[in-house]
Image 1 (cartoon, rainbow, N blue to C red):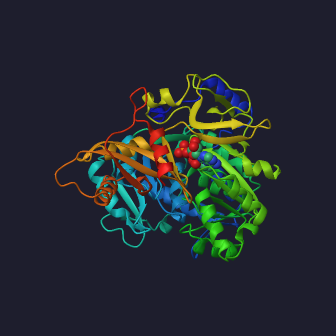
Image 2: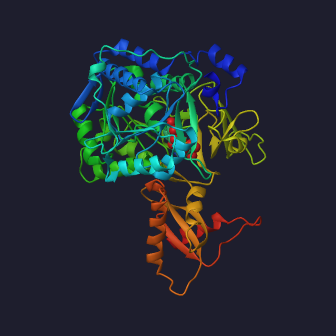
Image 3: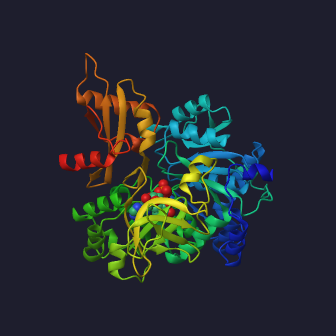
Length: 548
Ligand code: AMP
Ligand code: DBH
């Protein structure tokens, strides 16, 4: 059993384990222990509000325990994997805590993922269970569940939350299990609790194994940095499963402090501004694109919700200095920049930082245990202030992706530093400024696109000779994607508009997440090349800047 649980996992070396325990970062406590502690301290506080429904901590725990009984009766055991793909609803937390309680390992899929990503997650982990909604934002997840069932022999059960589960299992009524309890299996807190997902930069999305010990450390420390307490009321706008939403300080940080989580069904100002006023929300986390959208709504005359919040966190993509300044100086916003990654390292600007630090930097690391190096192309450390590759190692940063030996040898240094792919510099007082990126990834309003993954799909289209996906500047999202296509000419060549539509539909049909569908298509007779003969994406990006 123990060896199965470590299969495909790169462990922290023993001397680091000792050090992280000795320093008090790792407490040896499980996620279930964490929830029990929250419930013991805040039993009667309201934990979650979702639409008309609200749950106290004690009620949340009861539902978690009952769902764990259900899962155990279905025969699931420690080490079994499942995919959870739910919108911002209470069932997410019930499924998350209950499965982890049994030692099962949930994979944190986002609502935007489609069958290509889902099948990959299921196949790579041999997941037995998929929990999804019936539909959300116009998409029917049951169709996707059918595709996954056909493609993935390991998948034994699909649970559908919503009105109509069709041929799948409906979310169970577990109230009859109220006097039953399944105990946690004897699993150490150093084991993997669940899998986060990486935007990545190569073909397939990578699974990030996060242990109880490492994740809970980042959660506790983040809750303190974000000054959460039992009076805090957090509106969850971004997808609940995202690492930012879950842990920085996110819902888990909020539960640790005994606060109340209000789940927004969509991120529109219409939905969210009402909830902020109704529940007197104190904390919100947004990506820059949403912060800009909300600001535009306030500028058009909506109530200035920015001044009401105790803290607005912005992260996931680079926040423009000008927008940060405007939020603070014109709208009285108490802003915090968050620069994090699902692989681990998270940086925050702090409450007592100067306004200039909050405007112009992405903050400093959570922990003195976070080792940070900024290096040149030859891995030589640079002097303070110089821009270079950010490498990191620490008590909540993974040592390797799941079952990805070949990729790990490139993504990590020999001594275990994670190559973030970010180009940064550090100020004399230890704050990081994100200057760019060396990884071949597009950050579309916080949603990460590994260009290679989309190119592989485009290259399979019969009329495509080769393709290159590059970022193009976008006022709202920061970046959008443009696919340059060198194509096979035929007698009846379609127009650019027709071919663009065909190619976008082609990516969609291949089952990639909606945000990965190229925003623009450009047809070219040939590609520009670098001296090494690789497609020269820099030149392609420049063409877009001069053209638009
Ligand atoms: P992932 O590895 O998919 O979790 O994505 C993390 C990446 O998002 C980081 O490595 C950065 O490239 C980007 N990112 C996150 N927060 C920020 C931020 N505040 N500013 C700039 N880039 C960010
Ligand atoms: O973009 C991210 O992945 C991210 C941003 C802010 C993150 O994982 C986090 C904070 O924890």
